[in-house]
Length: 159
Image (tube, rainbow, N blue to C red):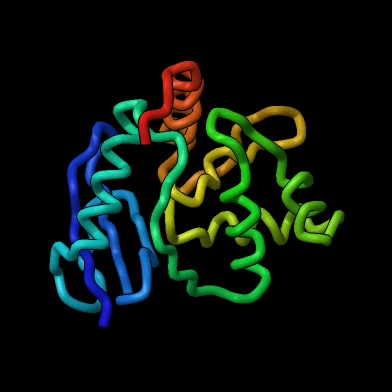
């Protein structure tokens, strides 16, 4: 059974989804998803950690994640989790880290399909020339998240 619930954050609403095993979706906006709208313990924990992230008090998420995607997508999403807070890397860096050095475009497509925004930080992936490239929440959102992390980088991590 899947459950979802939406919360308000400084960037607007996020809908958080879990499947009984872990968080399987965090989406921009208020969504109506398959399953039951229910504020479960796991969803509440995800919302708490996201609030701490936006307050600058959390730089690493500690949530059970339940990936639903192709083997390649999951490999890319796990690689995204390794990008340090406040830092960026390129699609090429990710492609190389998953063993497909010429797979920049495939990495971009996997990024585009990332269902767990912010926690699986696809916003930290940029173009080779340092430019911001597509993002599910729009480029302004991507820039906001990167700026938030830069501003909070020096704050002491409490969680």
